[in-house]
Image 1 (cartoon, rainbow, N blue to C red):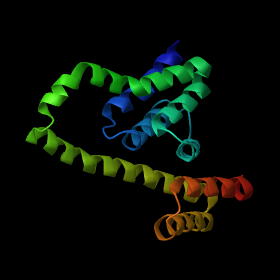
Image 2 (image 1 turned 60 degrees about the horizontal axis):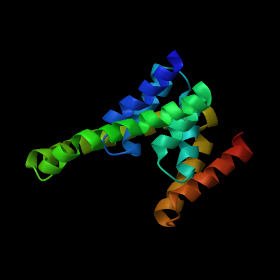
Image 3 (image 1 turned 120 degrees about the horizontal axis):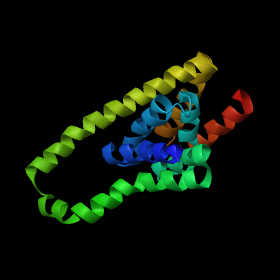
Image 4 (image 1 turned 120 degrees about the vertical axis):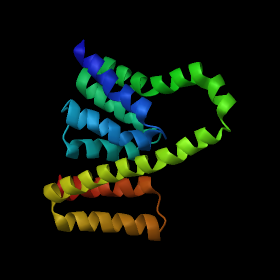
Length: 177
């Protein structure tokens, strides 16, 4: 029973604090899953993240379902997904009228501007951790090849990121697995 509570907390807290949706909550989920509960290593988390990005739909719920299933089976997956969407449901139900009333408030708009840099820093820290783990696990040349190819495909050739992630997953399965 404790594991279900831990799954709930691990995804409910990022759901509350992850202002901006899935990408903003990913570093918070990583903190809970990797550092707080030690369910996964950084490398395993990055693989789950890559897999979740390659599939259609919201990233946070896919990760919650997978990690919840790994820790608590089908019920764990259900708890994880519910915990991910529960903060949004609560806010929509309880605060919808209040948010609608103050949506044009300068204070609310200013708060949004202050939150964005924090999200960018959290994503940057998570990317740096992934870089460090990748450097250790696969070596500098593989890392440069994958990162450089991904950059060229996405930025220069305008290939959709999901396709690039799929290619990287395939490369990793063939040459690094």
